[in-house]
Image (cartoon, rainbow over all chains, first blue to last red; front, side, top):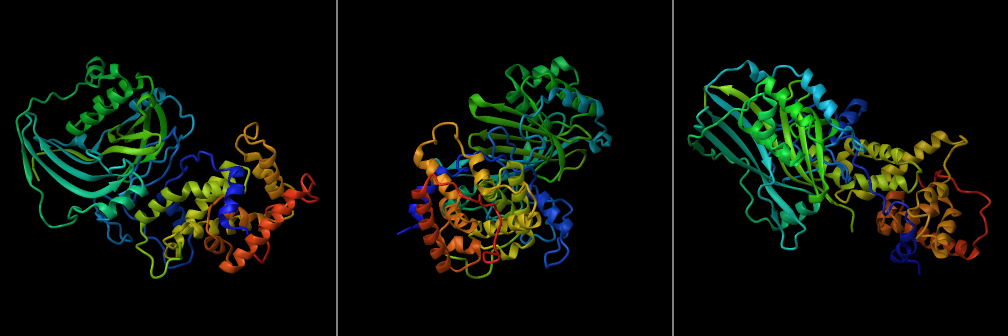
Length: 336
Length: 188
C-alpha cells in the first residue's frame, strides 16, 4: 500500500528545497499586475491602471524586510477594485520589495548624494499658520491571541493642524484591521467580534490640541545629531526622524541636513528603489538590529528628500511590527 | 481538501497581494526542486503569478495546486522550446545539486538510495512523487496539477511508488538514461 503519507515519509528527507530560505520576491505584486497588463492582449480583465496603484510586495528573508501592506490607495478607490479601501476583511501586510535585497551597500554615500540632489517639495512654496500632517499608522497596539501566534492591529489615520504654539486640531480615524500574516487574518476574522464600522458615515471627532512649545529643527548638524539621538544608533535615529517629519514641516535645507546626519550613522544599508504603502516611489535605507530581532526602514522621496514612511519589522520571522506613512504635509491657514 | 465550488471571492489587488505573499515561496520551492537555479525559480514564480492575475477569476480558493499546475505548464513550455538543446538540465542533477547538506548529514546510504532511485524514474513518475512527497499535496490536488482524475493520479502514485521501490532495490545500478525534465503529451 503506497499512501501519500508513506510517500512523504520516504521522500521528505531528500526534498532539496525543504530547508531552503526563499529570498523575498524581487518584484512586488503591483509590478506583476503591471507586467500582466503590459502583455495582456485578450481576456476580460484588461486592467485600468489606477491612478495610485496598490502597493504590495512580499518577502521574507532574514536580511531583508521592509514591510508593506496590502495597500489600498489611500485617497481614492481604484476603478477596478471592488470594494475599494476600507474593507472590513482587512489586509495582510507584506514586506516592501527592496531593489537591493542581498548584501545591500552602506547607505552613507547614497544618502549624501541624495542630500545634494534634492529639490523643493510642494510645501516649500506654501505659507500658513498651521503645519498640516496626514498620516496613517499601524501597529500600536497590536492584539495577540492567547497562544501568541496571531496578531492584529487596526490601522489609523490622523490629520493634524498645529500652529507654532502647539495649538490646533486633530482628527483620528480608525480604519480596517490589518494583519502581519495570513494565518493571523484567518484567525482574527474568526475571532474578532468587534470590528470597527469601517466606512460608516459617522464623522470622527475634532480633537483640540493644547498649547505646546514646539521648536522646529534647525539645519545645524550638531543640533540635529542631538535631536535625532544618533548616539543611540540607527534604530533610535530612525524613530526620531519619523517623529520629526510627523510633527514639523521640514524645509529643504533641513531635509538635506537630516540625510547627511543619517549618512554618518553607522549601520544603515541602502535598499535602493522601493514603493511605499501609498504607491509612491521612494528610496529606502534599513537598519538591522539583530540583537533585538528588529529592522527599521525609512523611505524617502527621491526628489525632495521628504520622509515618506517609517516601518519596523521583526527579522525572524520577517513580519511587520509597525508602520507610519506620511501621506500629506503642508502649510495652511485652514483647519479641516 | 475539496475543490472549491461556486463563484470565486473578490479578486482584487488585495486578494492578489495576499496570494502572492502567501504562496510565492511555495512556488519558488517548486521551481527549485525542478531547476538548478534559484534565479530561474524566482522568474518562474513571477510568471506563475502573472498568469494568476490574468486568470484571477479562475483561481480557486485552495489556490496552491492551481498555481503548481501553472508552474508545471510554464516549465513544460520552456522545456518544449528548448527540446533538442544540449544543455537541458537533467532532473536528477538539478535535484542533487540542490540537496541541502550534501556534504554531510544526509549522506546516509538510505537517503542516497532514495535520491538515486528517484533520479532514474520517468519524469511523470517523479512528478507525482514530488507533488505528494515534497509539495505535500493530496492525491486529489496532485491530480489537479497533472490535469487528470483523482483515480488516475492515485494509480500513477501507486505505480510510481512501486517503481521507486524497485529502483531502490536495484541500487546501485546506473540508469542508462538520466531523465530530463521533459513532459509528455499525456500529462499535459
